[in-house]
Length: 322
Image (cartoon, rainbow, N blue to C red):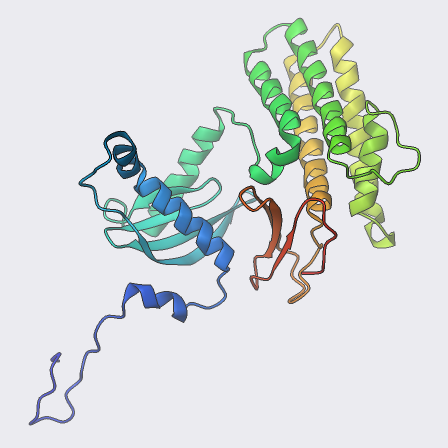
């Protein structure tokens, strides 16, 4: 087989030239432009940090700028409830694996096996997360930063807790996380139209409003019932633990776990309310809707993971259907 035609043999195969990497994106279907943009921004930020630092410090650098030429999602694998998306990224200088949740990059020269790299990433992220971090992205911190910080402080306190007084303190911090959620929801103006709003410290009443706003209708009866039940029981558990004279580490662990779970569910509902995100895509009817906050543009973007449809809503605007 030759790369040049043989005039004496018309049946000779001709190997076409390699496609330019910058043209590969036009041959990839079913890929969200928003997702691609996030991966491209991440790679170029990570790869050019040293170069940008030198430019900032000295005004010059010999380091070449690394620019993404092609980014393609290879697979998404769900492991213990968490989706990890793997991207194959080509730049003008290197080739990388980028794996999400949380996002990290790996050189394909050093780690050529995709399966090995994914296993390494999952193990690494498990160790990183065990060190405790404030959860949530920009879309959460935009209006629920205090709640997330209080959950984080309760987690750190639990790691150090040894005595009854420490365990009681976990109950107090969990209770404060719940009440801070109600205060931040009120401050965000999600329920300005209520005729007779509850007191700001009434966690049960405010959580009922959040749940009712996003899980309305007869079809969501059991969802509402479950969410209201965990909020009520979680609040009662935190109040009990705060004053329990025989509190144990197991009690504190249960209270913290319950608080993390119910606050996470409420934050998800509140975020969708604030962003005015639809429950499903208006184009393909998929329920895989991701909400992100873009501070530079001061708007929320709800994007469909399946077909790439997007809806953009400033915090104070009335949403149109995606």
